[in-house]
Image (cartoon, rainbow, N blue to C red):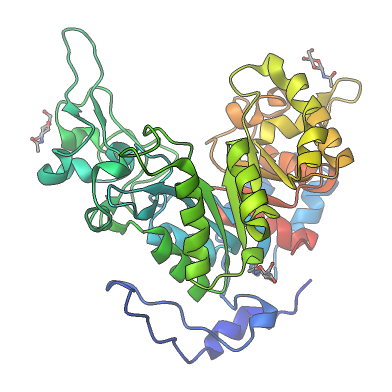
Length: 429
Ligand SMILES: *[C@@H]1O[C@H](CO)[C@@H](O)[C@H](O)[C@H]1NC(C)=O
Ligand SMILES: *[C@@H]1O[C@H](CO)[C@@H](O)[C@H](O)[C@H]1NC(C)=O
Ligand SMILES: *[C@@H]1O[C@H](CO)[C@@H](O)[C@H](O)[C@H]1NC(C)=O
C-alpha cells in the first residue's frame, strides 16, 4: 500500500510548465509537481461504480477482501490501462475521456493510431470510423470528402443508412476541428443528425452526457503531450489498415509504424514508458528488429481465434514459437484467458494462459467495462465462461482470476476506476 499523502499531493502543485507553441488553445497541460518518484500526483477519485460492483458480488472471500479496501487510499496504477480513454461515458479518444481516465487512476492511456491525408497521426479506433465516432457529417464541406457519402435509410428496401469516412479523407487540421461523439449509428436514420451518435443509438447503459458540448479530438502528438503533462504512460496501437496500403502509392505500413516510433522519440518519451500494440505479427517483428527498445514492450494483440473458435488450440500451440521469435507480451481478449473447470464449477486459467506462462510470455488483456450489463452472460468478452456470469459483480470474479491466477501484468478497461480499485486493493502497482 502507498502512503495516504498521495491523495493530497496535487494540492501542493504550484508550477505549471510553459506550454510549447505546438499546444493548441482550449486546454492547458496539467501542472507538474516535484514528486515524480511517487507517481503522477493526481488526486485519484474512483466514484461510485466500483462500490456498486463490489456490493453486487456473490458472497465470499473476494468480496470481503474488496470491501475491506473501501476507504482507499486510491492512487494511479500502471496495472490500469485506459482503453480509448473512458468510453463507457465519454466520447472515445477525446481529451475529456483521457482526462477522466487519469482522474480514475489509469497509469497508461491508449491512443489507437490512424493517419490523415497529409500523413498526420491521430487517435481513432479505426481508419474509417469518423462517421460514427465524430460529428464529421455535420460539416458539409468535410462530409463531401468522405470515401462513401451519407445515404439515408431506404424504407422500401430496408437498406440501412450508411456512410464511410476515413481519417485519410481529410487533413490533420480538418481532423482537429471535429468533435468526438459516442460510438453509435442509427440504422434507420433519414438524415445525418439522426444518424450520428449524439442523437442516434448510443446504448442505454452508456450516456451522451459528455457529448453535447464539443469533446476534443486529438492527434497522437497532442495526446502524448497531454499524457506526459500528467506524468502518465502510453500505449499506442497501430491500427490494422482498412485503407489500401501503400497509401497514395508510397506510404507503406512500415512507414506508418516507424512514424509512430518517431513521434514518441520526437516528443522525448523513453521507450520504457510506451507499450506499442498491433494485431499484425509483422508489425511486432518490425519493431523488435528495427526499434528494439520499443519492440521489447510491444503487445501482440491476438484475435486469431475470434473468427473461428476451433482455431483456439492451434493458436495456443504457436505461443512458444512466438516467444522464440522475441515476442514478449501477448494481448488476447479476456475470453481467451479463462475457462470453467467442470469438476469444481470455478472459473480458472485457460490453456492459452498456462501455455503463455510456460513460454515466458507476459499477458496484457482487453477490455473490461465494454460489455454493458452482465445479467445474460456478458457476451463476447466473457464467452468462454458465460455459464458463470449472471450479475454485474461477476466482473470482479473474472478480473481476479486474470490478475492473480493468470498473472496478467495489466488490464485495459473502458472505465479505469473499476480496474484501479482492484489494483489498489490488491497492491498491484
Ligand atoms: C511509467 O513508466 C516508467 C518506466 O517504466 C515507470 O518508472 C513509471 O512508474 C510509470 N508511471 C506510471 C504512472 O505508470
Ligand atoms: C432529421 O429527421 C428528423 C425526422 O424526420 C426530423 O425531425 C429532423 O428535423 C431532421 N433534421 C434535419 C436537420 O433535417
Ligand atoms: C466444460 O464443459 C463444457 C461443455 O459442457 C465444455 O465446452 C468445456 O470445454 C469444458 N471445460 C473444460 C475445461 O473441460
